[in-house]
Image (tube, rainbow, N blue to C red):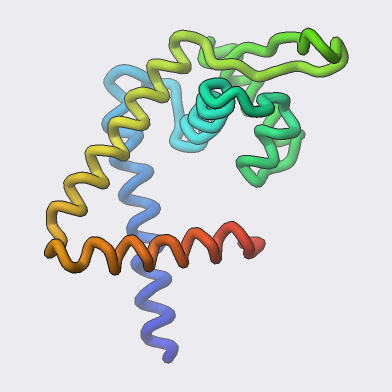
Length: 151
């Protein structure tokens, strides 16, 4: 059983490293000052803005699974880089909403297109009958990672 666990661990590590590296390389030409982690923050902020859900710091931090302090630090850097802004909440003047700038929307669009391209290319390598099975495995993985606290 251990070899399968080690094999899966190596696979997950390899995939995460390759995706992160490929994404940063792809975006480096246009967005040289962004890390993969910063892109994840921008993605969540853009999704919240687009869907009209809560885009206050606490909600964004919860969606990312990070502390408010970690988010505050990252958002400050992204505000400085002009990808995000902080705006006073019209209903609660004590709260601030995190919003993407035009530059943030552009970075998010490239980020989204990158993953759509990778997904499409990968799925095209699978035999048609395996696409559904692979999708089910990924659904189980998502459920696991959403429920479990990862060390």
